[in-house]
Amino acid sequence: MFSKIVSPAANRGLRGLFRNGRIGMTLSTFYIPFLILKARKFALLYTLGSLFFILSFCFLSGFGSFLKQMFSKPRLLTSLSYSSCLILTLYCALVAKSTAFTVLFAVAQIIALLFMVLGTVPGGATGLKFFGQLFKNTVSASTSVLPV
Image (cartoon, rainbow, N blue to C red; front, side, top):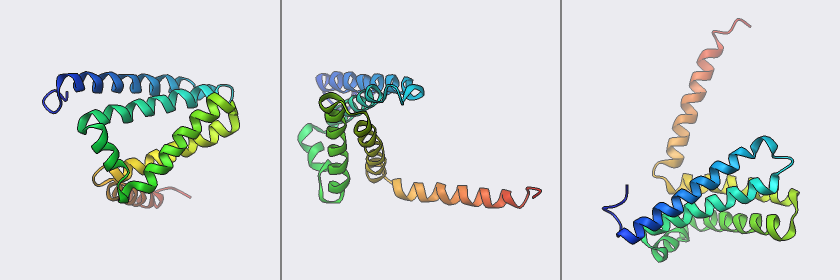
């Protein structure tokens, strides 16, 4: 997958952490139907999966340059909000054992992650506006067809 970009050792680290992130995210989706009863387990698995994904992408450009890019001036607010939500979710799930605050910070973490991805992916905000406008046009065009 990334064998031509990074060294073999970094490639193994990238694949291993990416796999662990995928496992954490997949296992967390199994807890969605039981979210009220097992909210802390869902948040813990989701947060650890997210953390593993971030660490796997650190192998692509190196930890120093990735963190420098992540906390650069244009991305500072989203990176700080995401990092603080990640840490607070782990704290509330493991130390405080508060289900309400765990859910609150897990939701905030998901929202911060969406903003972080939109800011990181080229054309993220523009692509979102494009698809939003496309959806709006499709819905408004189809409402005239309804027999109401």
